[in-house]
Length: 354
Ligand code: TYM
Image (cartoon, rainbow, N blue to C red):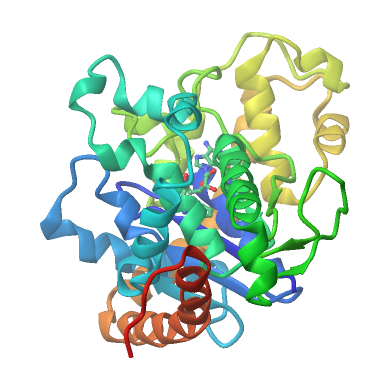
């Protein structure tokens, strides 16, 4: 049964990369299949966190979901810490995943930096919690930005190892579904699906406005490097005006963006915001200097983001409403995850005394 799951961390500033790479893609999927969108607050504590601010940022991400057009009547919206099955399944997956798999995760290496000995165990195990988020709902599709690809490969590896390790019990207990990709090496019946990432569109990897080789990120110390969803129209115009570029005019073909990471990034942002392809954007601006392209991009960005920012601000002013959405979402989420964990406990063989 198809189901979509994705999540955003309540840390720092939500930015254009989070919006175009993830949240904007969540919206149309809610009409295609059952959808669950989580504010992953357990992930937010894997690095040093501000406990006083966490509830507020959690509401802010929820407001961004709603303002972007996710409809709680269709999709489930909740915060991760309120459904205990995430933490429980993550523990079980910690015992399925191998140290070697996690050692290869580039995001851990980047986030831990040189001082790995001092990184939290939670930061190391971040990807197994992410696998638990997805598989507690046996979700089949996960829309994310490009930087999450490796984590989704790990999610498939965890699902596959669990399915293999417990293949016989899954069949004996009658809990499997037919493997959609029959293969003599794999069991005929699976408990967990092998989830497909959805990494699509022209904005899967938005780069910093100050350095086209670095990802736009919540934690970049320079606020000029990113467009925040909370920025005013003036902030947005200023940041685009100051964005790093090269002196050449825009080319007419994609070829001409090679080795011009800043130009390529701005064209990608224009394409994603306008709904045009990058080729169409270049056709419209071929031969134009950045002094023409940047103001057009700033106008477009303000036109698309201002309504979302306005709605976010309006929603954040009414925490009671946001909390009601999250409470209802957590109940609906738990109703799906509880039976899955019940199955998983039986598959693992835990004694349940009656
Ligand atoms: P987070 O909060 O770091 O990022 C949220 C989403 O934004 C995308 N993203 C970007 N997309 C394009 N360009 C960028 N510069 C950019 N920066 C961030 C991310 O790819 C992500 O889709 N680990 C997840 C949170 C998570 C999750 C999950 C996602 C926890 N459990 C289960 C899916 C399924 C993350 O990176 O959050």
